[in-house]
Structure formats: C-alpha cells, structure tokens
Image (cartoon, rainbow, N blue to C red; front, side, top):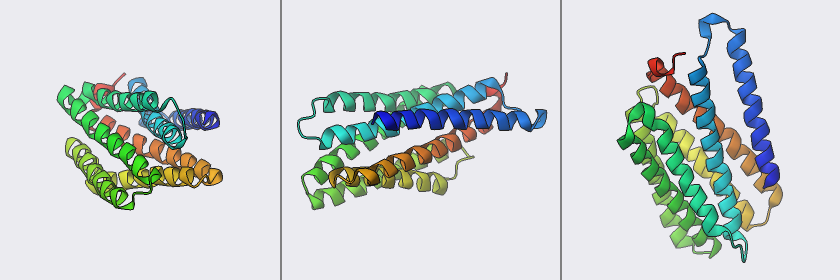
Length: 213
C-alpha cells in the first residue's frame, strides 16, 4: 500500500505540473488563476484520498486479525466530510452537508458490501450492490442539479466506473490476486483524478468570479 501511496503522489504531482505548464504555454488567453489551481489541486487530493483510504479499508477488512479496521473506517468517513466542506465556499453549508451525507452513505454501503462478500453472502451482496448504485444515482443527481455544467448522465457514468473499480479492488483482494489488485488501484486513481478534475472544472466555470486572482 505504501507503493500505491507513492505512485499516487507521483501521478498527482506530474499531472499538476503538466497542467500548469500547459496553461502557461497557451498564454494569457487561457491563463488559469492561482485560486482556481489551488481549488482544483485540493479537490483532487481529497478524491485521491477517497480511493486510497477505501483501498486501505478493503485491506483491513479482508485481513484476518487486522486491528486498524475501525480506525481506517473513521479516517475514510472523515474524508467524506472533507469533500463536502470543500464545496461549501461556493454552494453553502447545506449543500456541503448534503454531499457529505450522500458520500458517507456510499462508504457505509461499501463497508457492508465488503463484509457480505467476505462471508460469501451472495444474496446480500446483490441487494447492497443495488443500493450502492442507487446512491451513485443520488450523488449524480445532486451534482448535476447544483451545476448546469455537469450533465447527470456524464456524472453517473463516472460514478459507475468508480464503483466498478472499487469492486475490482475488493474481488482481487478476496481472491488474493495481488497483480490484479495493483492494476485496479492504479486504474482507480487515474479515474478518480479525471472525475475530480471534471467536477472542479465545472465549479470554476460556474463561479469564475470566486476564482479570480
């Protein structure tokens, strides 16, 4: 997992540098303000944490005798609060709290799914999976309603891919297919950065006055 954290840091740093170089190369016509860059980078970090702590939770929950499972879950749930707090300056406290609650539900359902899958309870896995995708629909509807630059179908597609990649991570962990698990985590990080940037870009476009120099 330490290697995954290092890979994530290198990937985020590389994308950040590349993005800023691209903005500079395009000249003043497409210059990006410092507040916009900061918001985008901070938001990206929160979603990277979302994937990494979810993966860490899968490790703890599927490892016999793991003592850190509750602590990791606590940290993962705090990440959902951080993401909700990140949008409060532009959407207000109520919207930020609503996003946090939706994301916490996303995590709670995922945690129950991990336990059901670990115990081989296929019926419960199927039931929870439907709830998980219903929650993804709710998150997609919330984000698209808040921001006209985010089409609900596009957000839903990104959320569904996120769920698939978390499922791949869990399946690989349960089957002890470590090579497949590394691929799923790497793919999950790449995807979540794309998803985070799509949301952040839409927010910056919606409220350009809040991201001026």
